[in-house]
Image 1 (cartoon, rainbow, N blue to C red):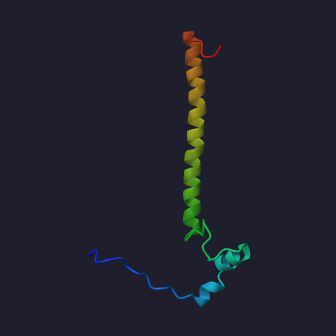
Image 2: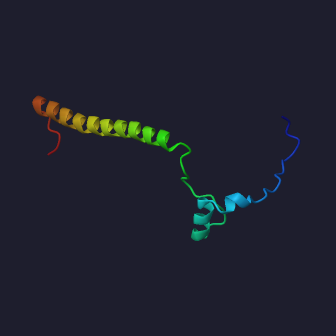
Image 3: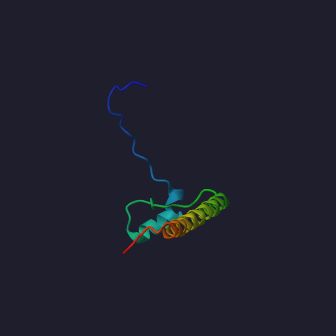
Length: 86
């Protein structure tokens, strides 16, 4: 690919089928100029839900480890007689 100059994009023609899509209707209701709404719809809902469950489990595990680490460090400090807060 060579850099001969700036590439010009051809204007995209409107798609009549996409005009009636739920995204385009919601965008028009909100007064947006186009049918782009951030977030969108997951292409495979079952896969997205499975990933959410997996990542949710990791989140719960990380929170539990952080809380437990605070208790463990506090217990160690108390056993060693270190003044943590005065």
